[in-house]
Each structure stands twice: as C-alpha cells, then as structure tokens.
Image (cartoon, rainbow, N blue to C red; front, top):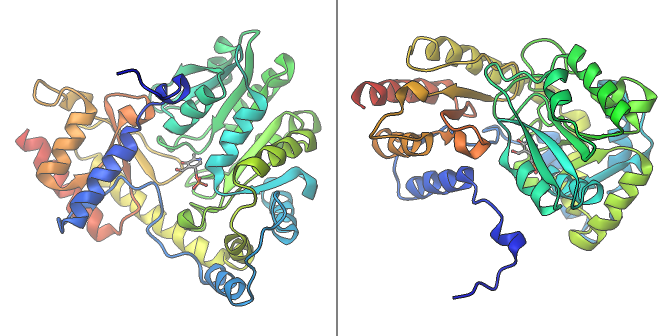
Length: 389
Ligand code: PLP
C-alpha cells in the first residue's frame, strides 16, 4: 500500500536511543530491577530556588502567553550569565528562550540551511542533530572521529566545500564527553570566518567539565561572535529536563528570524517554566554539589572500567557519559552493539545505549546519572555478562 507519509518523514531514522529507552522503561514498569545507565538526564532533583519560583508563578497565576522570545527578566539574567561565565556580551534582543534546546536547534537549522547546503557534523554525535539537518534539506557531512574523539581544525578543514553552510560543535560532547581544545577551537573560528560558515555551538554540558576550563567560540572576537549561535539550556546543569527550557544567543538578525519561526511553532516556552528557570541565579550551591557528585562517580567508574580489559575506555573530560568501545566483544551471537546492549539488558538488567544511536557502531554509551551504589552493581553485572558471553 502506498504510504501517505511525506518523504521528509519517511527519511527520519528511528532513534535506537529512544527504542532502548522505551525498552528499559517497559521493564521498569513491569517491576524488573533494571539499572538504567541509558538516561541522558541527571538523576538529581531540580534545585529548590527553581522549584519555589515555579510554585510561586503558579500561585500568582502567571499562566498566559509570554513574549515569543521569552520573558525579559529571564533574558536579562541570561545576558548576565553570558557576560560572567562565557565572556560574551549579548544584548537582550540577541537571546531567545525556547521549549528546550532541541526545538531551538531545529529552528536554527531551519533558519540557516536549505537544499544544496552542507552541514559538517563530527561523529560520534547525538542523533537529533542529523535528523534536524536532514529536515532542513541540507546534507550532513560527517567527520569520523576515533578515540579520544577530539575534534581538530584539520578534521574540519578537510570537509569544507563551497557548499558548507554550518559547522556543528558540541563540546563537551554527548556521547563521548570529549572537549575541543581551545587552540583548535580558535583555528576552527578562523576557518569559519575565512569560508563564511556559520557555527552552531551546543554548550549544553559546559558546566559538567572535569578537566580544564570551558571556552565559548563566540567569545574569541567580535567577528566570530557574528557567525555563531550559542546553544544552551537548563535541562542538564539544573536537572530540569522535564521543564523544557533552552536558550540560544547570536546576532540579532538570526535570533529575530528564529523568534519569527518559533512564533508559528511552539510560541513561547511554558510561562511557569520560564519563571522557574529564573531561580537558576540562586541555585549555584546545588549545582556545585551535583557536579561534585558526578565527578566522584566518574572517578569511580574510570577506575572500575579500566580493570575490564575487553573494554576500550576513553577518559571523558566532560558531560556525564562514558563512550566505551566494545568491538572486541562482538561475535556471532552479538554481532552489533545494538544486539549486545539488548542482551545485556535482557540477561543482566543493565541498560546502556548502543553506539548506533550516535552513528558509531561498536561502542556503547554509559550514563552515570545513577548513585555510586547502583553503579557498583551495574559494573558487577557487566563483568558477569562479559564472562558468560
Ligand atoms: N544538546 C545536547 C548535546 C544534548 O545532549 C541534549 C539532550 O540530550 C540537548 C541538546 C537537548 O536538550 P533539551 O532539549 O532538553 O534542552
């Protein structure tokens, strides 16, 4: 039977990440004691000042449409955040708040890319970028990174053509935790300016950094600032995945176009969530505590995973993931990372996300958004699985 779906929709790849996540959740609902290391979200509570601000907004009846770009007080607080933490001076008119970073990324690709354009995406990567590039009708051009997955300007240079419109940067990276060194980032900025290419810099995990300091590409100089859309959000740093608040900053012309498109899509982000997000200013103590806990978990896992010789372990510099090579474990029984992860889940009740979700077969992503006592059991079960298979 002829499908009624458009080619655009038929072209979407079903995410192995969501498939695995659904499988894990179904087992949990059925009462199985699954240790899910698949989650792309902190297991912590949203900080109290944010919760309180949200509750206050509900009580005060702040329940109408807001301005499409976001409430002024939140945009002003973000201007201050960019100035203090990222050394970038933005005007409020250069900020857009959206219903999560995801729709803002979608909107940015829609605004910048069209048929005939190319967007450079380093792999392994969060699969959503690729689907969003495809939805803009541009062609994703991949850079295949090997462990330790650190992007260099040379990798980028090799992929630039006269059609290159956008370079997508995600540092620290989901799924590898790799960081782009500042020296390389500066060279990438020079390449972008030379070839008149836009940069979408997804800095979602900037605070979850365990070595060195974060550098924002838009902060390097005035010229590059005009070619960068800096993406960020509250989901990870403030444990607010469900509240759906993200933001983007960039030159006024681009941001105004993004606001125009957002107006026809989601309109403003939830009024209550925007008011709640303003509590981020008072939440620093809780964020620091969360990062310290992530740091302990990372150290624990690093020590434990390095003891398993069959795994290829790269030390992640940031985010809350390990991206582990499992090629030596793939065999006739489990020929792909998808099959290996499914078997690990079915037999040992540990949920990892197969590398295919990040266009990197032969790997698995382990998220340490679980307490150390659960991580201990998970490592034990993974070891058992490796020995038995
Ligand atoms: N960017 C990166 C690198 C991510 O990993 C995610 C979520 O997993 C997002 C953006 C989207 O976050 P949200 O839409 O919750 O703001």
